[in-house]
Amino acid sequence: EEHKNGHLCGDTRIFRTTPATLDLVEMEAAFLSFSPVISRATPSTSSASTACKISKAAFVGTTERVSFSGSAVFGADFSFSGRNAEFVVEKQIVAQAVDAAAKKAIPLNLFRPQAPYVGKCIYNESIVGEGAPGETKHIVFTTEGKVPYLEGQSIGIIPPGTDKDGKPHKLRLYSIASTRHGDFGDDKTVSLSVKRLEYTDPKTGNLVKGVCSNYLCDLQPGDDVKITGPVGTTMLMPAEEDATIIMLATGTGIAPFRSFLRRMFEEKHDNYNFKGLAWLFLGVPVSSTLLYQEELEKMKYFNPKNFRLDYAISREQSDSKGNKMYIQTRMAEYAEELWDLLQKPNTYTYMCGLRGMETGIEETMKSIAERNGTTWPEVVKNLKKEKRWHVETY
View 1 (spheres, rainbow, N blue to C red):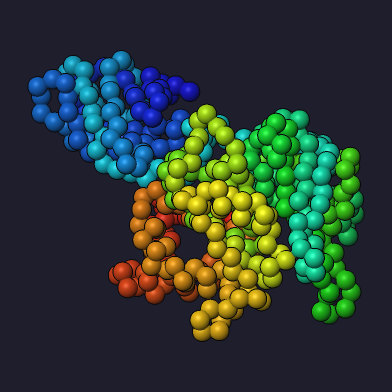
View 2: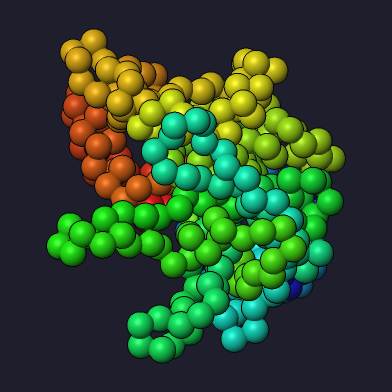
């Protein structure tokens, strides 16, 4: 969409306005959700170069040309005089991790609890091995193309019935496990990874069943299901095809990363061809709970240069000191390499799974941060500021 007289032209962002000399630019390119940084201006006239300033973000590793030639006012800080000018963007800035040209292109809250989309369950099968503690299902619902979504988003599920107060059950959010095109590539389905929640109440000794997880795990093909959303912008994939994407998952936290990886390695796209590095750390208690293991191993086999896969199986593996192999324990084996990757401006880290994951990872990374003259909280703070640290835990 044109923002005043500005428009997209391939990978180059072009803005036009009349005249030549900029005293100060604070350009809010809202339609792209970023502002380019102009560190040096070179007018096409013989007048002196003009210092320019931009407040937000642009793209990594590129020198972009911003041309001014029509007439428009982008903000109160603009001051123009003279003839046409050309400005060269030299400062390299971190791109936002949003797989869309504008936030308005991200589907959000198309269906709400008061008016949900009613889809049908068409697939509901276990994805854990024999003897696994608990049950986890891969479940596919029809959308008929009416619930568009992006990788990294979630949908809400409204279980039938009422709560203890007689009120309708509230929706529960689940991370989407399929790409925007669905498991069948026809843009007409959405998939979830759902673990059945059951536990014994320590006070009463009674079996407690999670309302929504048990409802979903018990669905039969043909059953209706009320869907809301989609929601979420935190976990969206970066647009760069050469990005390094580090994914940290426990249990069903693998869901958004399955969607990432299928988009990278299983699907073919005219506008996306992943050439970077995807590195997944997956933590589970026992090997029978390694979700989507066959899919992951296949992707690793056929994409050895672009996909790295490391498991942390806490009850079956240990480190050299005999400690249980949690996800942070496995990461510690690669601490130096991970640190080096985090220094790259196009490395993005995503975390999804059980709440508390961050604490263990901080324990692993804090010493290497200190050796490099900083603290891990400060590192994470800066990564978040640069839109390169994304967390969704529950």
